[in-house]
Length: 230
Image (cartoon, rainbow, N blue to C red; front, side, top):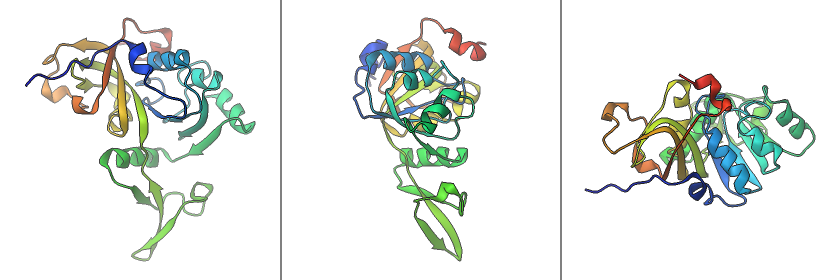
């Protein structure tokens, strides 16, 4: 069986993103954040985006470039604590922010990838996190209904990929990238190395190529990647 070659230029992949799309962005802080794909999205110019990301990176880094260019209307995240610019936008009413406990965000994304409607959790009962959410009773206990998260596009950073889109991650890049790669209609990957088909040992594959649509190879790592240089 001949498997398709999914490698393409970054611009060709990013140009598929439209105004109003929901975009999942991988990463746990700097590790796993697709810095180059983010800059390509800034250049592309799509606006009114909803971003789903564990964190808001730091000022002038990662998704903050999209915040600075005014392309983001809503951010679904776990915290903004390292990004004073994002906090300022939220406080000024220029950015809608939906906070989630970190494990709940991961579970909502996992549910989206698994094709289920959501998950039940008692985390946040009686707090601001429960505001506006449905509460159900089960076996005498109260649970919040946490709806699944799904995206139009996921932007993923991988250490290695093959031409079909099988991916291998390193370190904490595994925290959100594999989940997001399963929960989006279109998955765009930047990889530090793109290998020929068969170049990844089967036991090294963290995301199967069936979930991936486009693979782009990084020619170099910018200073924003400095903390993950190995």
